[in-house]
Image 1: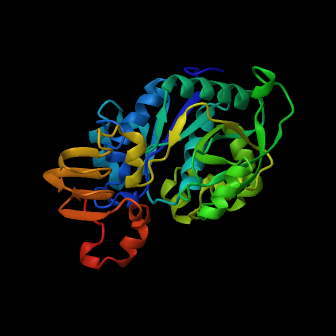
Image 2: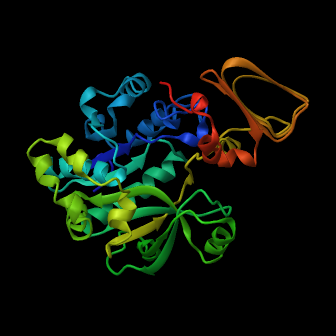
Image 3: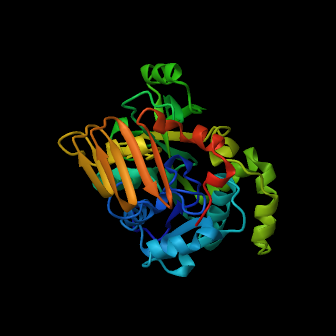
Length: 358
């Protein structure tokens, strides 16, 4: 099986709150609708990558109905039938169960590539090549594949994969291209533990998954029977009932962390989940003074700042190491160090300033 194979399906998880990009991002308009890497929304960049793997008829986007106006505006080329609207957002396990079951129902040999809508991935050639290899492996083996990215810093905002032994079986390529078992998933660590994870050779968990639909549903039944028991509701057309009763749990916690079939391939491309304003220093090219500017921004005698404006103009004069964001009627000013802790800030905001809106 190769990209553009009729059995291949790409599922894009397009929900999420994106609170770490407040005030530009809110639960009603999360970060995937912001131009944080290119001049287009992140979700549009993701769809472009997906359409290099499959024709649009084999693409599905899963999101809450409240995001419909933003998704249809950002993706005018995507037909209505490509969207799967969640009646309730219950995290990634119910969402991927629904999407995988639908693919399996229409094609028992379907292979799923699951992507998040808000990541930075390049170059596209390396991405396509690795996904093609993962698809070939998943098509021929009873395995749930994830992609692990090589860390370049002890980041506390990412989960980590602990690689195990090389899996036995055909390599689908050179001898060194066999997937490795995943010994354990490690959630977001503190700085000391993150540095230790890197020393031990752990990889970042990208959340990019590849599996044969039938294999995932089998592993779901073995390790998440509370979700698998609700599939008859999908068979009966009761999607509302399925999501109403499904537990709110990630697919990592519900299935992958428990399954002996989970394996990983190392990423051969750059990956960033664009998790905070500080990430713009990695996704955008700085000026000669190290500043990153997006939108209507004026910088005078400034160094190493990140500035974002949806209205404007925003003017920075004689300052260093700040993050300044003006969007949706709010202005936030913080240091680059503190910008990683926006969730803590939002917990302390008065209700009149809390992120709502559309």
